[in-house]
Length: 329
Image 1 (tube, one colour):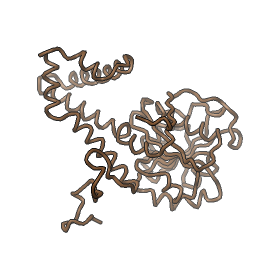
Image 2 (cartoon, helix red, strand yellow):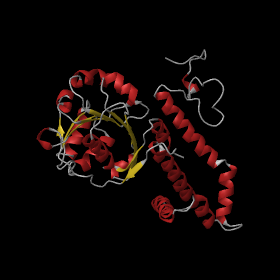
Image 3 (cartoon, helix red, strand yellow):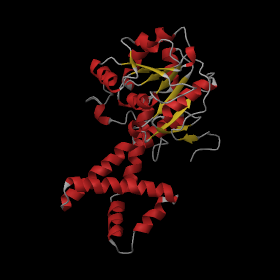
Image 4 (cartoon, one colour):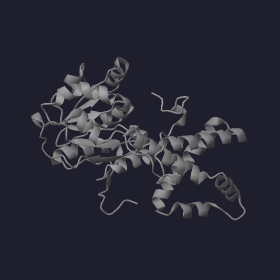
């Protein structure tokens, strides 16, 4: 449970309070470095969404010609920049959408382009702490976020925070909040530690759900359903169950019990899941994801059930060791 000291705000993609933009000409400017799926999820609605009194100017750059070509074709309202410098010039918010492992290369190219300015850097990179951006780019105004893939259809949830040591003005936070709300629900947390936790729940969570969908569909096919019918049954069952849980406001245990008759079919299925330690496996997977996110950020991953004491694990991935037991290079 979030402590009382953590400020938590959740909003759906509603238009923010409109104010006159501070950018030149009164138009806010977004620069997207990287033009993959999550960048597109933000760019698509921003092309028509008034923020600070006007629809923002959007530029993007990607080192892959194929990716940039696809974005330019799909979203002609966004301007394709031919160089990184052209992309970030005069930008109010630079949205970093590259791969986490490419951070150092991006920092090297981007730092001289922003050295004389103080734009906001909004990151959607998993496992990269704000301190690394401050050190790598020399920028204080860092916003770190963790979106998820349903954001590509406006049904996502994004957890975000900002560098508490930086002086943001109100308009800059409106721009960040609006760009994240374009993908669905945005939730602000004051403590950066919750970003790694969110990675394990909402960031990677869709993969857990997709795995469950795959398993249920395959079982339906094994029983004799055509795959398209099994898929439709599973999709609607999960969608309806989530909507029902939200609408009812009941604890999931109450909802589960309402489906489970004594000595019935559901009771037999639940017994089998419990015997297979379904809850524990799910929770262990979430803890493993959280630990990996901590490791990627250079933090100790010695957390969680049975891990809070004793020596820190060398790695979450023992297969990555060399034959002599040392970490692989």
